[in-house]
Amino acid sequence: MADDTFTWVCARFAEVLEIDPAEITMQSRFADDLDADSIDLIEVVNKAEAERGITIEEEHLYDIETVGELVALLDERTASSAG
Amino acid sequence: MGLDVDDATLKALQADNFDSLNEVVADTAFDRHLRFFNFGYRPVGDEQPAGPRLGAGFPNQDSAQLLFQLVGDADLSERDVVEIGCGRGGNLWLVRRTYQPASITGIDIAPRSIAFASEALPEADCHFAVGDAEDVPLPSGTADVVLSVETSCTYPRIESFFREVARLLRPGGRFLYTDLMPVELVDPFIEALGALGLRLDHRRDITANVSASRDARAARQRLAFGDRPDDDRSTMAEFVGESGSRLYDLLTQGDYQYTILRFTKVDEPEPSDDDLLSPEHQERVRHLAALAVELLTIPSAATPR
Image (cartoon, rainbow over all chains, first blue to last red; front, side, top):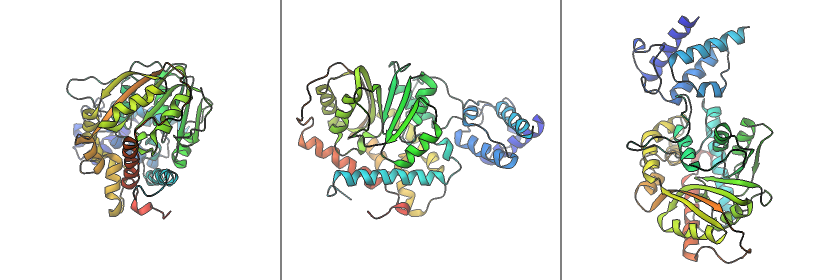
């Protein structure tokens, strides 16, 4: 599931940030590597919530630094809402 | 708009303005994340940020940094913290998350801001109420710390607010105060608070830091308000302090100073009705409050009063 989620996250950030998705890795840091701010991150998380029918608590979102951490959070929320 | 309306009307209009801003934000995808309505602080040069490191997903990082800079070395743990003009409760939320206070209490004149804060912080140690900063609906001696962040410039009779701060504080309590202030009023404000028993501990001009925050973030933050009618554009630029706005000009052109002031309540002087500010300075305060009402009225949301 992480692979699919990673591909989805890359595609969304590529749209929002207008960059090549190939530039994004699991280790990419939002602020330092991608120049993404909280507005970008919230935009992508809102899309994930709408498409997957999940809810991300704000407090979880606020600690995120890397793409890998966001992928893990989305997978965890998707699994718990499916279960 | 001008000085020809009474103070109660100015305050009611200011409440309307911030209620309208809440409505604007409620229409966006950022509503639940947007807790701060202030300009923020950005370290400049090789200055290191204060406070805990926040993740990239943390919204309004510059507003968080303004709070951390304001708190400085003040101890908030196990303290009863009151914020006057708390808006949507962002500062108190962050105080609670960072400093483990005994309780947080927020007062704001805009009912929709208080509704947001109450819903975001329903816990038993969190209290929010609609109220006037110049006539605060709290008992005397209930605060160890009073916070005031970028709100006093909208108060038409600021010395009433200063009296309320002194009334709310317990002996030894701290007043942590930051705002955009007319340069010639910073000393009179400190003297007025001194006459109320508050000793100045720390004073810092952070105009360059707040300007740096606006240069870096204002245009981006305005986008978070979503697509607004053209008529609203200049007002939304005022709310975020974007380059080209009147408030940005005030901040950057030298007549105003964004100042951090920290006080300790060291004395309880006999109550007195003597004016704490000269008539000229009081007029200047009122002029600024009226200007703020004018600049922050959202045209598409304005209702005749």
